[in-house]
Image (tube, rainbow, N blue to C red; front, side):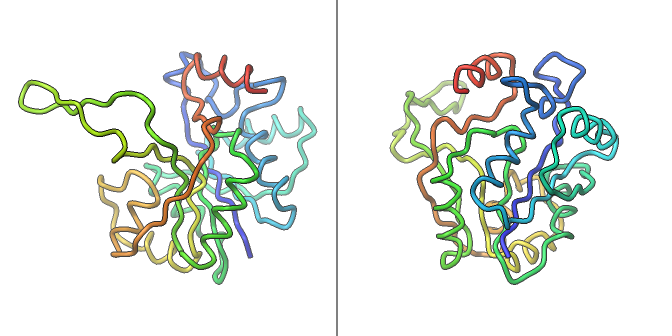
Length: 218
């Protein structure tokens, strides 16, 4: 069984709005709905799990009714951190299978990237989409800075897709501040992560500028 665990715990602080960013409309529809539709378009059989803070779930239900959004999905309670939110969502995941963890505010992931990540995860067990760094990067150190070789770096996207049993075992570990994404949690078990090409349009919508870019992408 394939699962998509959509993590949507934003508060909208960087948006300067009282409405959490995952609920803001782009092209007349909330961001989170568009994200769910991307995975449903890839596979109607995929099990969709949305992780939301408990305090936002009633509002999400109201939005689903308002927009007549009937795409099947389950809702899990968000946690104190992203780590705890993903762990809560994994309670709905059964092994064997594959599970992708995706940011709720990345509605422009391509069908090709979703397909490639899930296909690779069948054998590689842990797959992360990345894109090249196109700007010059400087490393801050000792009160100064140095240019580094950008070819040695990649920008990480989602969905990060894993063997379900592996990811559930990884999230059985105690929380650490070093866990900045799902790949870092899996790597703590000593499991290597496979990188694959992402798509540059797969932006994370977190600021008003991102919203304008999203409208243009639509």
